[in-house]
Image 1 (cartoon, rainbow, N blue to C red):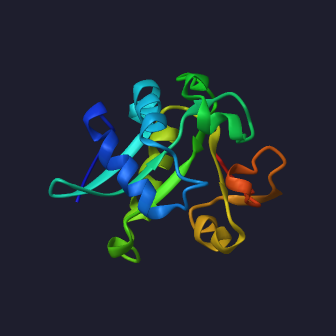
Image 2: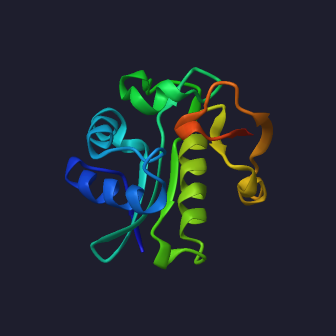
Length: 161
């Protein structure tokens, strides 16, 4: 498996994987991914089997401590020198799940954030995923007051270095 950062020619494949992983109300569009890759392609961790995109993790960097819905829609909020690496999505195609691929990408994002001198990483997730993210060192901070993306109850989780 090959891991690399995103390029503009990856946008259609990224959007297709996202559409398979999230319901329409939660999934980012191809247009949104075009903006995201334009602003922070180096904060997308893509995993390929040969030439097929099978999984990815993405999110921008900011000095804001909490993940808020506006961040999903406004890639221009990215601040390359920011303190916190946000994680907007952890995506693995259904046929490739339960093989550790997402975990490998999360560990890579954590390592990159450490090397870049960030304070840590922040993500939101549904309650059923607490234990999954906890094994990487994320701590549940409770129900997010700043994210109701897709009309879902999200918990904010944080990994602080």
